[in-house]
Length: 199
Image 1 (tube, rainbow, N blue to C red):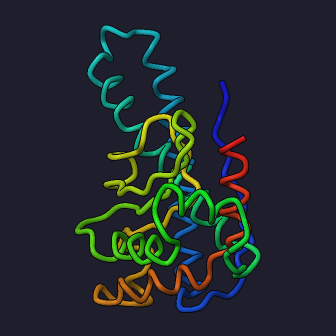
Image 2: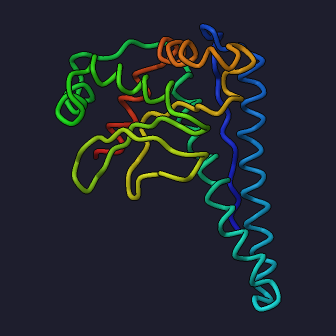
Image 3: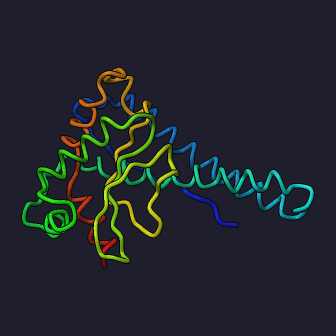
């Protein structure tokens, strides 16, 4: 039976986001990996007597989407912070795609940051590539798994759960956390995510 494997990330000192916050956040990521593996293992066990464990199996299937998306969302998030900040490529294919699908780059960034900072509750602001229509879409995800866009690939995601920023910014500092996330962002990673998704 296959297991999920946690990735390792080399994240430099960041503006605003402390090493301690990253350390604790990575523990949560590893928790998603461990929980997903435990769920898959337990489902395999329960399938030997589906009738007895029908309710438990249903709950485990429901929970798997939360844990699995917790893995994948965080991999997008942490990889975008590796290698130190790299500027947005104003001559690249990502800029062209953003402007075709989302409007001028400055307006897109302002709107994306506003979505992240002003949406109530916990979740993620995400930029997706939709291979069916060959376009980019920005959306909000509740928790880890409610609002994921079916068939799309996340190329940029910012974690807006409070564990991502409260220790460094306090609850009132959400907007500054978003600004600092973008100041720390390695746009070369996002460009590569887009290139891979749009092949």
